[in-house]
Image (tube, rainbow, N blue to C red; front, side):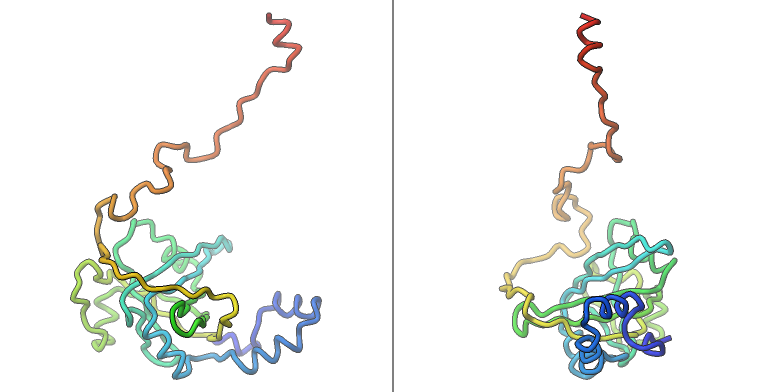
Length: 220
């Protein structure tokens, strides 16, 4: 179901627009820049994307954000209302997929940091589909020649909203060529224990309570 059936913007958005006096400006943005499908230039933009940021939440609204990356074209546009991105081998936690299993709402964002300095938001409903099933329905997807980048499954997104992210706060970046160890399980090549987490307490340690000074003096 398209979010546009109830008008663009959430109830929270609308309430704050009214409170902060931005309703007219927001309505202009909705009318000029937000659509319930992908337009041709949006499709071209997604097809050359090499990374997307995704946001999901579980049934209780606990959020998670993550990154997906691959060569240009790794995000597949199946039609103007449907896209799919691959889930490659990872750490086995499945935080994003677990959220989608409870709550299908998903937000995606990608940006061109090199040339156009512009971003694209795509919000919609997500479904997890096994690799063989999606390829059976869409044989045009083909097979990735790099086995390290072989999709285990896909997230298929029904587009509800698509809209621009303006360039004024998007930094310009310069591409640096380097070889990537796609699919590796070697800890050092994956980043290892970069944040030095291993061996630290899983939860916050209870504070050590010191005795009052007068008790220490009596004990002495």
